[in-house]
Length: 337
Image 1 (cartoon, rainbow, N blue to C red):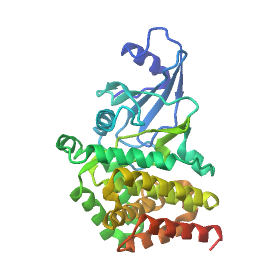
Image 2 (image 1 turned 90 degrees about the horizontal axis):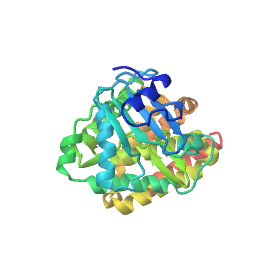
Image 3 (image 1 turned 120 degrees about the horizontal axis):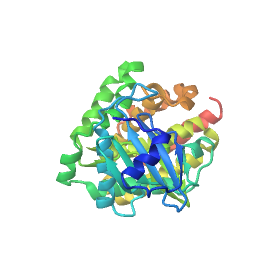
Image 4 (image 1 turned 30 degrees about the horizontal axis):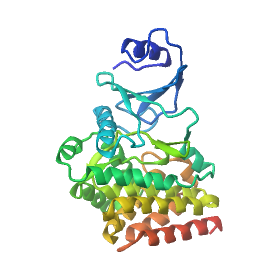
């Protein structure tokens, strides 16, 4: 596999019929993910592109997953348009090169901003949580019980990235091994829909009052509660790390659940929400103490550990309970307790 550079992009896209010969473009290397490289191609006539090439091993962390995940990312994007709907807030696939583990996608508008950056800056745009809940709810409702999707996505090697982020929690918290193993078993045993497994603020662009969801290499046939747990976990983490905007952030989390539950009614049960809370707790610990640590969370490890362990201990829970608990935790954080 030849790794593309900024200098290679024009020739590659022209040779593969994506660009017209002599078309003037601007190539920008994006921050990308942890196990890939991403370029944005701005075209004078518009219709900008994103070029993403996947690697087997992360360049910055210990994350690793079989390169076959690159093809699954393309399968996922195409599946979303086919089964969830053409209006699904995900990129269109323009070109796929399985030999080079590369995909060319339609780009979001140039003025789009990363949701993670906005939350870190304390800028909370109302309504985004509801859109995320709608996206995940439609994904689960439209794909549940479809045998051919179960067969296709049951063994995506890219899910190893998500599993590693959860399983690595036990390195710092060996006493949580039973909880980690139980959660991973549940994800397999309760698998009945296509699960994105990476709906996080770093994978969401905001523009014109709407969203574009990015990155699908972790997608797997799994437990829908995992997806909601991942979304809630990241709202909780931003609330803990940014207590000044915590109430706005948690309001977005509540709106996310409300929109999700309106589409995927199974989420109304306490058993489902208990699973969501446990997945969320482990994801929170994975981000603060696992193999891929978000640096902005390091000063808040004690608070995250305390909140996550409390969530793992609950026997029954509703979204109202979870919201009230996180509100209390962030209020204590704001007061310096």
